[in-house]
Length: 188
Image 1 (cartoon, rainbow, N blue to C red):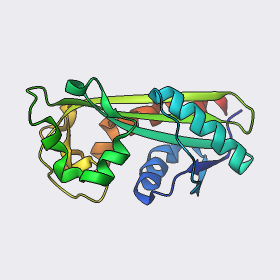
Image 2 (cartoon, one colour):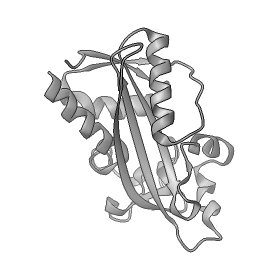
Image 3 (cartoon, rainbow, N blue to C red):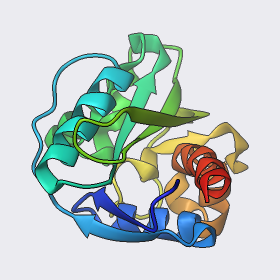
């Protein structure tokens, strides 16, 4: 049975707003919880599962965690789950320069949501991927690397240049949340 309320482990107000907007049709209420969790090194799925298990232990109830990755195809999907550290060090305005020596500027935006009913419970994974390319920063730089990722489906706009509803319809986060929404509706 799907929960009526979920502890969404994030301190990012932009991420919370996007997730709330996309999940609004499910009737599930999100409670934002900023919990500092250590992240292991590993695959996207390994990191998400571990983070979810730790979060469920920390809050003692149902949790939803999210891990966002930006995978450069020329770099064999790096920086991947470590993109936050690249972003902190370089800023989105410099991401395009990381691929300056490569002809291939293609990338994948990957979002993985992990859900656990509580401590010691199984972790479910919901993942979405959006193909695109890394470009010079365009648009607002207030939300991660949105200004330098131009999705293939984006009609030449970066995520930052797109209206929120259009971005949510094609984004990696929107695709992952569509899978989560489908599961939540089937469980209620």
